[in-house]
Amino acid sequence: MMDRPENQACYSFDLNETEQIDEFIKMIIEERGSIDGFVHAAGIATVRMLKQTKPQFVEKMFRIHTYALIELVRCLSLKNNLNDGASLVTVSSTAAKVGNISQGAYGAAKASMEGFLNPIALELGLRGIRFNAVAYAFVMTDMTREFLDYGDQKVLSAQYLGFIDPESAANAAIFLLSDACRYITATVLPVTGGYGGNVLEVNRWQQQLSMK
Image 1 (tube, rainbow, N blue to C red):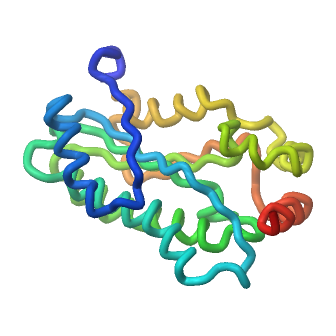
Image 2 (image 1 turned 135 degrees about the horizontal axis):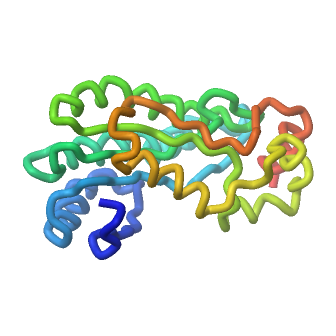
Image 3 (image 1 turned 90 degrees about the vertical axis):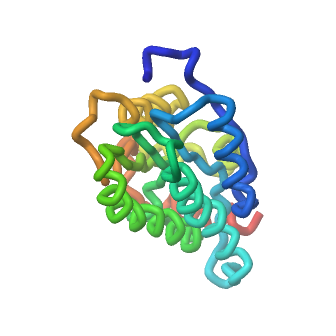
């Protein structure tokens, strides 16, 4: 799978539109045929303090991260959408286990994604399909850059190997997709750059961010 770039593709989709995911997967299958590997990566990490964490905001976090993941995997598992022996990867976060201040809803959504992992890996495993997650700390994306003016040195002091570059982040997902980990499933692979979470200076920084 990984040595055939002509068979690889990247799609963008608004994961708020969970009711359209079925048609989205059908479109991919029509274009590409049955799938050997699929990565679900949702690009949102809004932070809010508890007093700002109202049901509408929590619903948004869960819709984009958890509800979308469940519907994507459900649709992929139908009919002949996945080849036997395929690999699915979802993107979690260190916030699922060591979330910082203002990450309550985000961390809860990511933790629920990880809770979905094991029972579905067992079910898909009957067809030899693997299902794993990769949990990143701070990755140097455009979204992250919007935050860094407020506290990059504070984060670097906690993530002592530095911000994770996008290529290295992608390599972790590629590894989980590849035959190199054909016996690995129901696993969350941490890619942290040394970040352990719950660092006082980072908490203060994220508190400031939530007030912007």
